[in-house]
Image 1: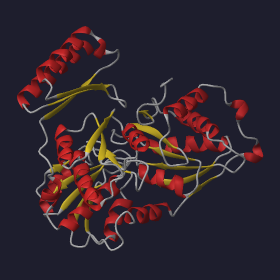
Image 2: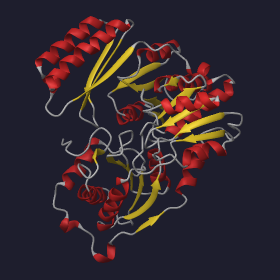
Image 3: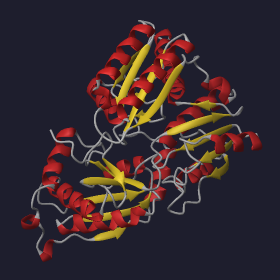
Image 4: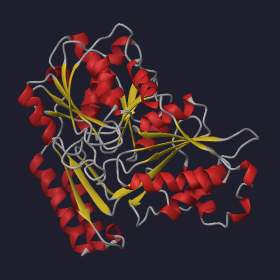
Length: 447
C-alpha cells in the first residue's frame, strides 16, 4: 500500500514546497471522485487554521472539488474537531481541514474526513493516492455539472453550541478565572467565546493571528507564555490549544503543566464514578507514562496501548467499544461527543470535574506521580539511520539496561524527518543514560 502522500495525520509538508497549489488541486479532484457515491448533489466542508498558505491551498482545493462537481462549504478558520462535527451535522460527503497542527507556519497540511466525521482509513487514502497519480482529465465534470462554493457564516455559532452541550445543562463555569492560549491558531475565536458564554472570566492570549505567528512561542507546544500569565493573574486554570485546536495542555493555578496522561486519568476517574465508561479501561499510545497505567490499574481499569497517532487510538476505541482515549501530547478523544481529538471539549470535561469537586486544579489533576520519562528528538536528512548496526546494538543494550521495569520506544516521526527516542523507568539516571546512548548512536548514523 503506497504512503506516497499520506502520513500518520493526512498530507503534511512545507507550503509551496510539498503542499503546492497543484497538489492541493489534485487532492481535491481525487478525493471528490473517490467520494462521488450516488446521484445526489455532493458537498464538502472546508476549514483551515490561520497560516498564510491557507488562502492558497483553500482556493486550489475549491477549484479541485468544483471541477469534479462537488459543492464546497467554506467555514474559514475553525478547529479540526469542528470540521469533523460540521461534516456530519451538515450532511456533507466529505470534510477537509487545512492545517499542519502544531508545526511552524512554513508548513501546512490537508486532513480528510469521511461523511461520518472520522479520518479516512489507510485503504481509502491509498485509493486517493492512486487517483492523484492518474490522469483525471477525462473524469472532470461537464460545464452544467460543475460545483459551487459558498461561505457558511453560522459555523462558529454551531460549534460553540456543540461544545457547550457536552456539559450538563445546569453546569456553569462562573467563578473560574481562565487564561486560554489559542496558539494564534484555528480556535482563536470560538474557544474564548465558548468559555465566556459558560460564565467564566476569560483572559485570552494567542488570539492575534497574522499568518506567520501560529504556534510561535504560544500554544500547547510552548506553554511558557501561558504559565507566566496564569501566575501573573492568579488564574484558576490555564488552557493551551495547539494550532488546529484538536489537542490541549492544562496549566494549574500554581503554574504547573498538566499533560494528556493526567487529563485522561481525571476523566477516567470521573466517568468511572458516574458509570459513563463504556468499557473498563482507556486507550492510549506507547508514549503514555507507565504511571498512568499503574494508576488506572488501581482503579480496576486497563490501559490499551496503540501506535503513536490519534487515528490509531481511535481505531482501537471503535473496534473494541471504548469511549475514552488519547495521547500524552493532549489529543483527548471522547467518542460520546466527537470523532476526533477536541482540545476545548476535553478542557470542559476537566473543568466540570474541578467544579464538582470544588478543589484547586492542582489537586484534581495530580492523579499520579509520573515515572521518569525522557524523550529526545534526532533530526536527520535522509536514509534510514535506525537500520544501521551501531544503532541496533545501542537499542539492544539500552533495553537490557532498563530491564523489565522500564520501557523503551524508538520511532520515526510520521510528520517530519525526526527520530524520537523515549525511555522511562523508576531510575532517572538509568533512563537518561539509555536515551543518551541511543541518541548518540542515531546522531552519528544520520551524520
